[in-house]
Amino acid sequence: MIHTIQDTTTLHNGVKMPWLGFGVFKVDEGTEVIQSVKWALEAGYKSIDTAAIYKNEEGSNGKIV
Image (tube, rainbow, N blue to C red):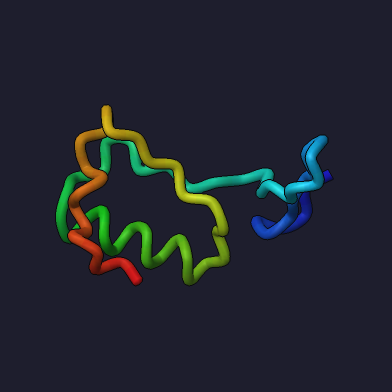
């Protein structure tokens, strides 16, 4: 059972994977995606779902960290 956004499941190879992740589908490139990911990380998310098809993966220009 999931109690927090930090909860994980253990995969067959021993890797712990978060149950929940933050997705950036339809989040505008630039400031919106940067702030969204920063807030998700501050809230405790450990997994950020991105994909080239979202067309916003370059929106941070390395500024998220």
